Image (cartoon, rainbow, N blue to C red; front, top):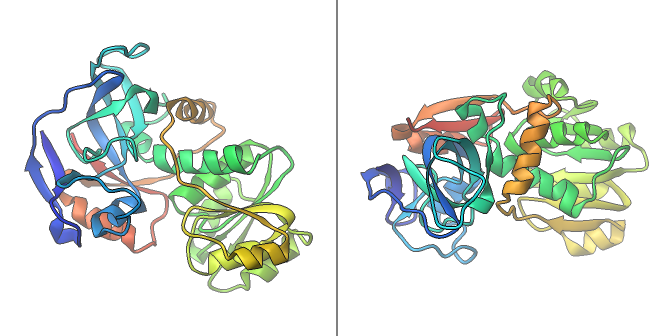
Length: 316
């Protein structure tokens, strides 16, 4: 099979399109014929070596964390899937060394779900990691419920887009930060209000919207978003980060609970997200599609931080 491989950590020059042996499923695994693979910031962070010490995978390493394709083979003990089934899954961090930027990938069946019927393979490949990150941030950590007020930093990005859509589906009031050019897009996802982070004082604008502070703040961006989140959340509310750690002293002073979320692959939760997509309650963000051979260019595009929605590789 063809796959995008790195032999050492570094920049885009480390990425090579190479022939590798086809994977075989172990007990509890399925092999997926990859049609499309989603791109996430974690991909270039892995490539660059930024996650060494957190995830010490052996090299050479096949990159890629999101997959949409068809079941090719079942390992011993797997039930509920059949060859040819259209599925999607997150392979991170459950597939050390063998990621989704390949024609085939072996994945634990517990990480796999039937693909949403409303989506094609490209759109489905952009869902798993971002949507699971939001689901686990909102439901497993923050306890999202109808009537909550939710603030989302970087609301036009892959995670931010799902955050707006999932929070609105739960019956929350949602606001978030955008660049001016993405304001209409995020309103179209259901946001009740948007704040131009370049042209407005984000904290002051958020306080005008919800003077007592938001129940839940999701920092889907680094930098100023972490400090701002503690001032936007209400006392007793929660600020959740997917990018870095909050300042503990500041959080205590503001009376804000904090959490950092590292996504875990979960096929059951992915199935719940697929049901919301098929019901028209959660929207999959727009995708820009690159051929597998241009994976390096796609990751450099992701690295700019100026992507609306998701980037995807077309594998076959």
